[in-house]
Length: 143
Image (cartoon, rainbow, N blue to C red; front, side):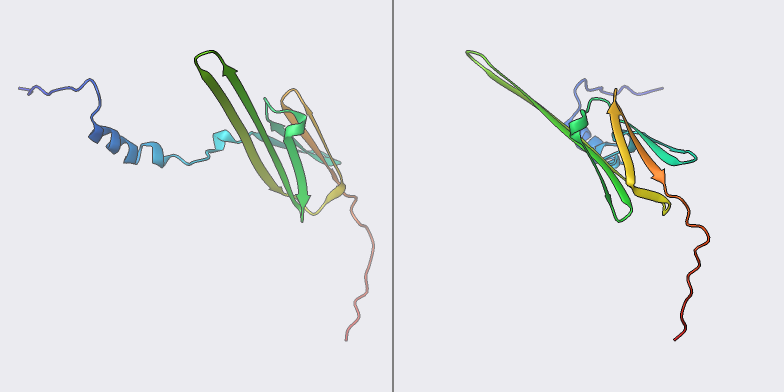
């Protein structure tokens, strides 16, 4: 025979704290999961690599693309604020969205031929491949 148990309709403080610290709870999730970063497709073509970054909701001015020592960094940040003031209340709402992704570039990239466009939520970056240096022989002197 099964015994009757009391079922609380409201969670107790103890159960809230246990859920919070539980391994399946809030703290077990990474602070920034992969789902928060935009997806990137990398396409290897004959004369260039193409990166297609899905980043809807941003404007062209929100992006910053930098290449430093063979590390291509794509970042974006946007903020919005809305204030509504009436006779007996003030309401302020704001939001901020940002991300940053970095990619190690291969040696065959022509760094002065990197171009980017943004349209309809898709950032396209073209990385031209450098022409291979053929037949140049360098003699090494033996000391």
